Length: 293
Image (cartoon, rainbow, N blue to C red; front, side, top):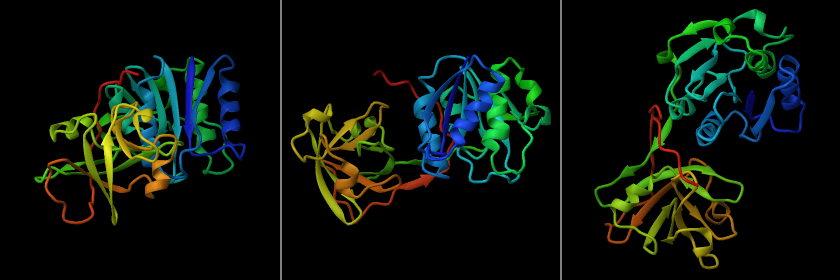
């Protein structure tokens, strides 16, 4: 049995180690995979995007535990969701929703409210240890999901909120940065097929409109196709468009971060009347195809 663990705990404190100790104390033979513990503190959106990128590559029967819980100690629910490939545990605050959809949707959902399967807690602010780690350990030890708490209607789960790009009548595409990786590559919320409809292809040039700035960029196949200090646009390893520089941080060079607005103007598109503002529409992220790597 494998437990995959992701959190915003960081590694400076003992939080991650203690949670893993609880899991191993209940299921000594379980393997634990650390997906990341450097999710920005309290950033549910960033956590949900990490999970949706990772879940498609986890082995079947994995128990995925995710903790980004700014509402810890409140009335928000902690849930376990059974999907086709295993189970996902975490707060019901939108964190799990995109990954659940990527895995094909919820089959069974329970609220983790059965006291027998929690640790005695001196206070309510370490639910990752006292409830989620304990539940994961019990599941790995063979406790049925139904024993851990009250059944819930999957339709009552809090949906994830993701931003959608806007394809404008003039041919430009207004979107935003979804994710900046440690190399400074900026993943956009724009599917390459949207850019393809506007006639962009490897070698094509386009304008990148940022807040108060316009940069030229070229569509390439991979990082090494970029010339020194040349801004390029490419399809990343998850099938979305990304802004990049070869061996440099595009985020640092352009002043971009997650949530920054970006508008792409392919060759032949009409003029753009000022800086772009991407739209953010509440949607429940549906399944997408796995990307060949």
